[in-house]
Length: 361
Image (cartoon, rainbow, N blue to C red; front, side, top):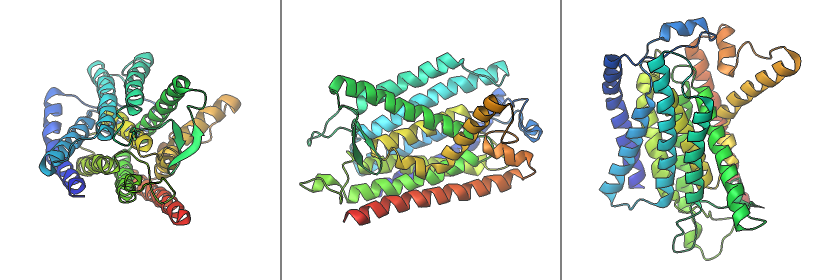
């Protein structure tokens, strides 16, 4: 538990103090945000604001996690390394996307096929590795079963090991792509995605700590009163480091933002959320805990689908936060209310999670 607290605290301090230094570097190099022309006109004033702040979030997370592990003598587990690999790998893809936007002064970065290829490569490596590295109990970081609060009876390996691996890779990459794009879509107002991420990853600290305290590794038979997560405490350390990094970054990213996280941050955070949900065996539960992200994606899907079918729009603009912006709501009002909604989703998710354990007793 000490490692969890140290990781969160160190990541927070590093992010809080490191972000202004990174802002100065970006300003010196004139790496500013390019604003899309079809967006709300109020955003034009944000043109030139430093972006790629996700670099700070990633580095603070890695440093906080690494330092905490060294200080407490905690040996890094395969699960922690895999989540951090996924986070960093997608962050690199996002960084390339951001850099192209900045250097060429356009709203489009990497071409779609290269972005998909990059995300897919990182996702496939993560997925395959997640089914390896068995511990002394022959338990791997991930399993081929689809999970809700724990592994369900739906096993992707129903027709053999090879097909099971292929189906798991496809399922894992779907989750990785979905969550990274969800966070990316949410990152449209000052502090919105950062604040929501802080709340969601904070919830995962609680989930993973609870799993550690109720681990099946200390019980001879697997049952409803324990969880089969391979390395729950190490996942809690990673989640705490990400929470702390987001906390420190939010100080500078809140309205009026001094820096944006960019695709570097949004893809990295989405990847980390996907990785935590897969390795903590809470893949479906994550859709409740991260319900605000899901809501944002659904607004975009509804807008596009309805327009293609009828030629009319449901919202004034998608994603959802831009609809309220064009309806006259202030940016800070939208962000705070969306944070509240995110908190309610997290409360619902944690409530469902705990209720299942109580009923299982």
